[in-house]
Image (cartoon, rainbow, N blue to C red; front, top):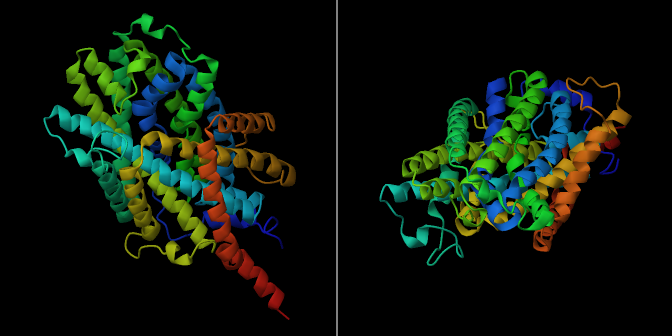
Length: 471
């Protein structure tokens, strides 16, 4: 049995999904949707919208979101099909293991581990920017050395706030998914309400002259902007990693995937129009563009409200992606591809506490020392690769196993998966060469770990050896 044909039986996975896996099944449809919205709406709407408009697309950032949204929507429909069919922790990693074999599953799992971990770092940097804005309005200022990563300003050494919040979220996730999800749902509700209020207020101050020229960097800038803001329109996949903690995963997971992305895209488009309408796009390249744009209008009373809402809302993104990263690590370790020590479940809280705390510590260091743009681009290439594999897996499984029960069926197969693959590859090509170099380096490291450890220690490999050793 080769690493390509060594696969998890889908029927066994479906049965496993409904059994007691050691994790608490406490998440309902709103909690799952809130995890998805928590993952999608955060730094993208409060930070990257302004940065992309200023440096890549101008007011045409609206089109960047549309392009990125099309790719994301096609992939979301594919995720929804798998989520209803294989509701097991691990998301695209588990789907790949069942359809494409162990080696590709390792590649996508290693890829997702990088993606989710770096998302936490990116979001923490944006969170720190907004909290610093709130503290500044209140007359409190951190020491210069603690205000940001090296290269982000004179005298900056370490982003202290970004590092601390990651450690706090790791502690919250360790205590338990039920209390954590309630906290996350509250934050998501606050975030959505404030975004709607901001869009409504900003609409009265829109100056159409700010939308001209609409494409100052040309259509090429729109495409590059889409590659950057794509980071802002994924995140629904985080909720699929919590499949084993959902009460009714086969029914609720597909609905939550589609609903969370639909709500997010509407809000992103509205925010893009308002933000580029109330301020020239060239002024939006700063750590807190929404808050600064309203402050420049003289609406200083809204600045603190926006920043406080951003801090609360971005915290929910940290929760969603750190949860996802820990569950991916847990699933890979449970399968033996990484040391099974990491798959230990806390005896009291019933959470994968070891990978959670390690991810919290690693992201604290990365967020403290790295500028936001470099991390965001590396995150995007990993996500796009995952989308390509998931979309391809849907088409493969439709041919190989048309008999499988599917609670949700991706429409217009193979057209929709091909759209997801095509857009994802297009956006990947738009990313800088240095991003590709870093990504390839991470993949080489991952393959080395797999060949030296996972290849021999996977549960499927052990089962194969046991069978070959039987008389």
